[in-house]
Length: 327
Image 1 (cartoon, rainbow, N blue to C red):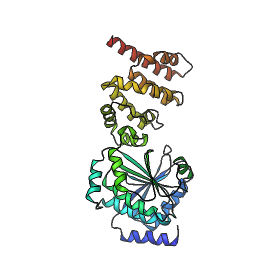
Image 2 (image 1 turned 90 degrees about the horizontal axis):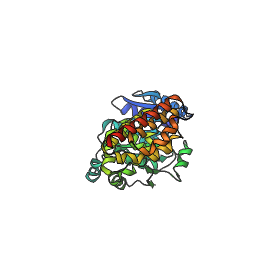
Image 3 (image 1 turned 90 degrees about the vertical axis):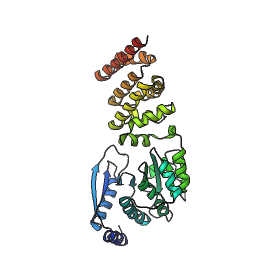
Image 4 (image 1 turned 60 degrees about the horizontal axis):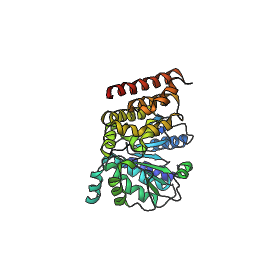
């Protein structure tokens, strides 16, 4: 941190009325140390900022979390520091004024929208983009924004095929490079097909207790969203459990629709660890698809551990019981 940045943070602290709390998400990633170092300096020069450090081994990247909607996978230095400090003010007060047509779009958003913006500390255009996006987060809780430093996390930038900054992504389907057309972004968020929602957005719905809203959306559309199968094989148990609850609700209301998950989920079975395999077998039993019986019997009699064999047998019994009821 440069002397100029230290001064800027101190001046922000002197002009800020209340205390504010940030979360520092630490992972096994070695870059956690760099974010920790920044946060230690931040709280030293801005005592009104309290940093809560949490270790989350399951998290993909270390992050500085502002509220529930803004995550910095970046060290807010250089050109990134000013919009970072401004975001602290904005998200704490939630008082940002917006044009009526922008507010109208925001009021129509009823499902999560996961935005990612790639930036760098030397980019002269990135602060403008961040200042355009931050008010959206404070105005609608469904919108989430991850700020990723393309040079600190080059593997993420490569995976998302980032050629320049700033680049904004909505799920994996839409991208904007350079200036951010806020109205266009909001229009796409409002009008997009729910079936295009990514696994990350659906996981967010589950984390916020909306698993049954997710099942209702799939029942209304008469389709299993393609990314949903990823949640049923998610490494985090709480996400998997919510997805299983949503799947059980679908099976209870539309067993034919529930069976659409069988083949995609079976394709996941051999790739997973024992715990996830057990949960997959449970859901396969819930679908009551008799076509699964030969494969389930192979598992119940095969070279698997006892828990997996027992779960496969329970799935078999559930399917056979339903067949008796419907015959």
